[in-house]
Length: 392
Image (cartoon, rainbow, N blue to C red; front, top):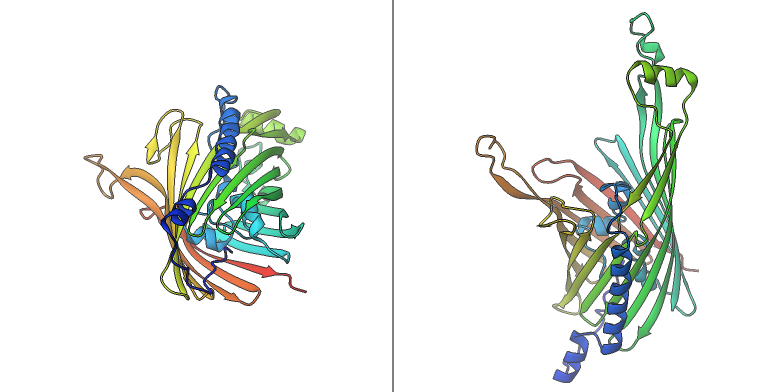
């Protein structure tokens, strides 16, 4: 988790010092502009390509109860092992000792199970960090009713078999500190990710993609940029059916797939955060993220074709670096007002979240109470995560 240096009250600063802290210096602005230019170039080269709008959607669930409790607003502030997921540049916040992060969550009354694990290892006097992340989202015990009906038309429940549908992602991350002074820190990171998806014995897919991230951090202000799937992510599907399964699909007028390719469009997440210090033992972090997609009009706050913007807001109250109280909202959408089927009036709905965290020496336990949908369609779930620094 991100560390807030609260051991001493910040000293009063002169106007010139405040100005240098509040805004990135010229070199840092060049770095951020270069980063954005590379992203825009990557996006423009794929503007005319057809994508599946919600491809690899399991990668948008989140990682770590801290981030989920803060409404997924993490790009600017994340400085722990979960940064491999949110923004690889933040991995440089892992200092001195390797860090292990674990999380488990269940959705839809336990039907969908989501697991996350990562390890981050600092190198080169804390100037570089490598990370390995694994994600799995699965629905088990799905009923296969392909042979439920016998050739004579009778129903035979003994023919029902079960299978699982599982999505896996493996991220190899690298983060590098580009510049560090007493009041500024600039970090860059990259992800190489491998995706594997399978639906029982019927279908399998392999995919590969790249992410890139940048963070610029001052004493109070934080800025983050994360480009996801910057080269697009390709999933190549292959299908395998027995002759008996093909016959059943044919007789029920189902198409028998052979091969297909699924592409995930690039997206850019921009984040800005600020720390508010109330005393030596009390501070507040506020962060806003803007998820920018380029694959056509979506039901978001800024909705246009091809660019849409989905804002996310999060807060974290830090009490003596021991107790953390968090809250957030995201997934703003327009929907019909409850019970209003006649006037078709639409209102804004959103996805709320809240949680707490406890730091005990080198161990942190976090909890999040989140809604997978929004306040008009509650699908609340409890999420727990564990972070351990492997101190010798």
